Image (cartoon, rainbow, N blue to C red; front, side, top):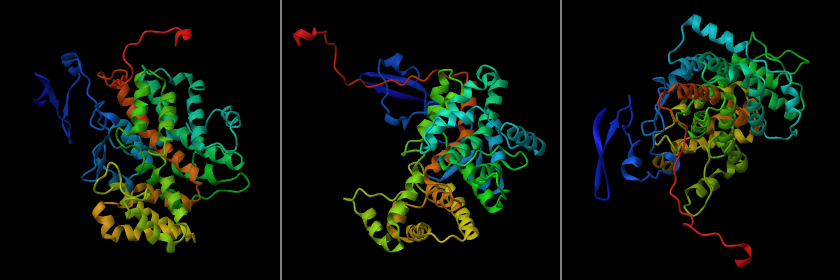
Length: 427
């Protein structure tokens, strides 16, 4: 604890403890503020409020830093695997060889889902959005796995965590297969986590599916880069739902619902739609001019970032990955041509450099996923797949935190004051 902070309200001045983190800004402990002053603090969006203690992920947006358990995201994406990062987020340390092998084995043995879930899918329209399906089926998992819903039992919590990480690729792949009218494929345990997902998504029973190692590596990097991102909207939603004692499957369904919002998980989908709207390299100057026009509401999607004010540390890795994927697939697509030219302009145009409108992770991931063959509506579902491990890690941390209470934000009431009821005939 560092020097206390003095807060003056009217004629009263009170001292509040200042708590240091490992890195990053200190926080003022205002838990007694209402009791001391009879007032609330006002912080729409909680942009200046630390709602919890966490040892999982640290972001410094000004410096372009993203750490998972202290490890820089670019090192993890370039040198690690999604299974290794999942273990790290859950347990706090990188696994040894045996620990990683045991963890991978455990996850691979939980990838199948209850057979009745296939009939659950058939209750949706064929054109249902994958996120609508995921909200339903992930929440429904609690009705199939009663042996892992007791949140007071650490063993059950870990079983539920393993199940969620393992089954999300299966559920997401099933959502895609259902939308295109193809049969569901069962998981194949001898494939990697990511390779298995690619096969369940793009394979068919009529022929053997061969996993392309470059595509597999690219998808694994996308999963790593989206695994966790501190106390964002969906993670905060998972924590808030979990603070009530809700089972883990319900908490993850709540996170999926929040991620579905276009301001959160739909950014790469929006970026690709923008590229399709531009349509042709010749039209790029027109859209650049619109982006620079203060009176034009048009915005370039996939450029800059709300958190990262300098650069997105994930974007560098994604750019290199995008180059590898496009080179491997050798695709001729006007959308990809627009993306390459727009990227070149953004990295060299003084306006973009000055405004720090660099291509972010959503720009590159949208390009990659489009090149691989994922429909645009699947993008957010893939985000949910990757983010599940972060949600699970954050949920476990919250449940284990002795200071955690049920979430109960307060408000600044601006409605009517006391009014007496008037009978309907006298109004």
